[in-house]
Image 1 (spheres, one colour):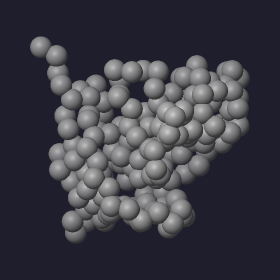
Image 2 (cartoon, helix red, strand yellow; image 1 turned 180 degrees about the horizontal axis):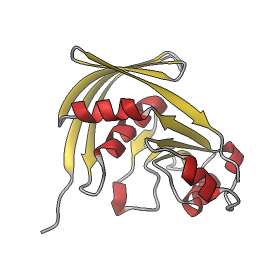
Image 3 (cartoon, one colour; image 1 turned 180 degrees about the vertical axis):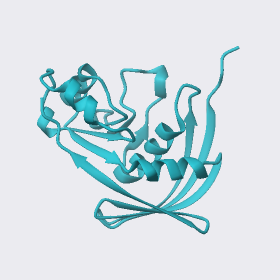
Image 4 (cartoon, helix red, strand yellow; image 1 turned 90 degrees about the horizontal axis):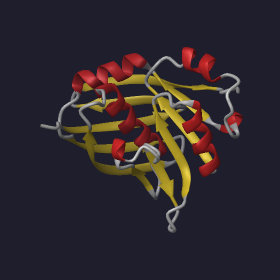
Length: 180
């Protein structure tokens, strides 16, 4: 018997002062059995950090040719390709050719990955944006993870402040340059 996805519901009050974005989000997110809780939390935070009209989650691992998150125009063309984790160079090359902007959000240490992709053929590698979540922040969010969650996510100068009930979790988002 195949395992099914677990559905998580997130009610998020988003206050992103960096972009002047203030929204109330109701996200229904499917977590595949092979997906880690850290990955799920990183996906939700990346959604908050990238929130704009046209942003959507992909259909997941059932369609490996699609980005994890994408901003599409009204014709369906991918304008922004967003990955979570550390994609392989071929996927990154494809993403960079398919979209005007590529962003990667990771909850892992990118050091070894950066050494691995150095010298690989990646279209416009210098334009790819790599953001690294504070791993203690991700771990604290995973510890609070529930199938129904309400939280406030505040973003200022790429610093995250996440309030869940009476608890506050803080974390820094670090930008790392990719060189190929």
